[in-house]
Each structure stands twice: as C-alpha cells, then as structure tokens.
Amino acid sequence: MSEDANEPGPVPERGWRRFGPDSIERAMLLELSTTFGVELRPRSIDLDDGTWLEIEGADEANTVLIQMIGNQGTFRSQHRNKVLADMFKLTWLRTALFPQSRIVLCVTETVAQVFSPSGWSTKAARDLGIEVRVYTGDGKLETLVRPLT
Image (cartoon, rainbow, N blue to C red; front, top):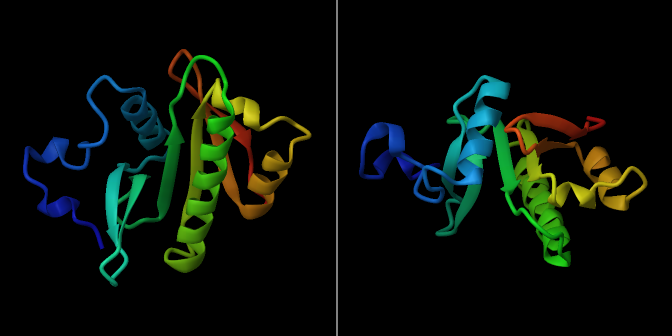
C-alpha cells in the first residue's frame, strides 16, 4: 500500500521527499518517532482504485497515522481550516482503511490556539479519538488533547 519502498535514493532518505533536512515538519516527525517508539515517515498510500493519498507520517504497518501543521508566527483562520481538514482526513483513514490505528495531529504553538479548553474543535478531537500534540519552541512534545477512545 505504499510506494516509498520503490523511491530512489539512499535508504535513510526514503520518504523524506516532502520535508527538507532543516524543516520543522521533519523535526516534529522525528520527535514523534522517538516518543512513540516507531519509525514514522511521510507515506503515499494507494487506495487500490487509482487514487493515491499522502499522509505526513505513518509507520510501516500504518498503526500510527500522523498529520502535522508546522506553521509559526501569527495565527490565521487558514490554520483553523487546516486543522479541521487534517482531523477529517485522519478520522476517515482510521474509519475506512486502518481501524486499529492511532491517529495523531501534531501542531505548533501558533496553531495550538485552535484547541482552547472550551472550543468545539477540542471536544471534536477528543470525541473522535484524535490525539493532539503540540511541538514546542524547544523541540519537545506536549499532549494538548487526549482522546476518549
């Protein structure tokens, strides 16, 4: 279900085509890999009908699925839209293809503003079983939303 095995280049760099060596997304994914104890890489998933889907991070068995939003600076409404789109994508992937997967949305401190304690997106993430992690300025991960499931 993944094309990354056929990707040319040195083995350690396979799957990294989307994120440069100094990108915040690569740093986020490496920290998530360490935290979860699995190797996470960007993946292309073949939906077996001619459709391909990009996921920003997954382990080889697709038991952990990650979407990330690495925007920094001023918060904008487009960040909220990306959060909602990524939550939908993760939920659909787990429901339709990988029912046993752990789904995680990782955001920067800028984007974390979407998840206020009384906000509906916080409740939605919790109710839908989406774990939300914040990648902090010092390169650490903090849990922002713990899923109910």
